[in-house]
Image 1 (cartoon, rainbow, N blue to C red):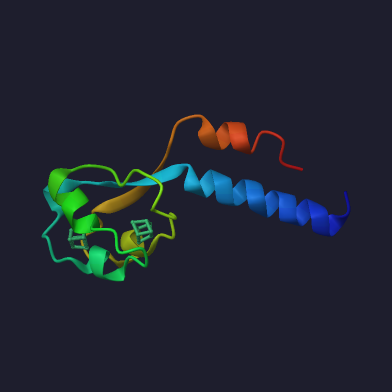
Image 2 (cartoon, protein in one colour):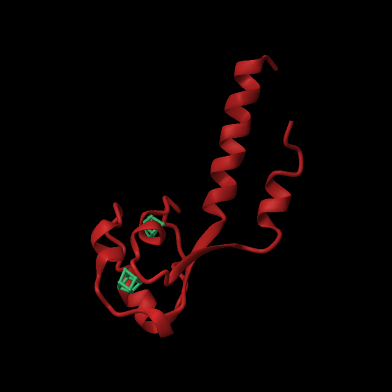
Length: 93
Ligand code: SF4
Ligand code: SF4
């Protein structure tokens, strides 16, 4: 595999690894401002997840990080789903 092929392969594995993460809220800090939901490019109601204290799971979230970056209260963080990142990146060049 040439350099370009290796880079594409690395990027594919990196994207899969990011997709294996999820956004986790600390509901005790959330003021329900809705900035997270407003800025989600997929239209996910992140505020509702924060209200319930539930991680954003499922196939719609692309783990772009917009909600995490925009929350003025630091409510949201990324959490890797255990072992998936390690498994996916185990054969990184
Ligand atoms: S942006 Fe932060 S504080 Fe505002 S609703 Fe979303 S999680 Fe809560
Ligand atoms: S990480 Fe991106 S896609 Fe996922 S909920 Fe947050 S803003 Fe939406």
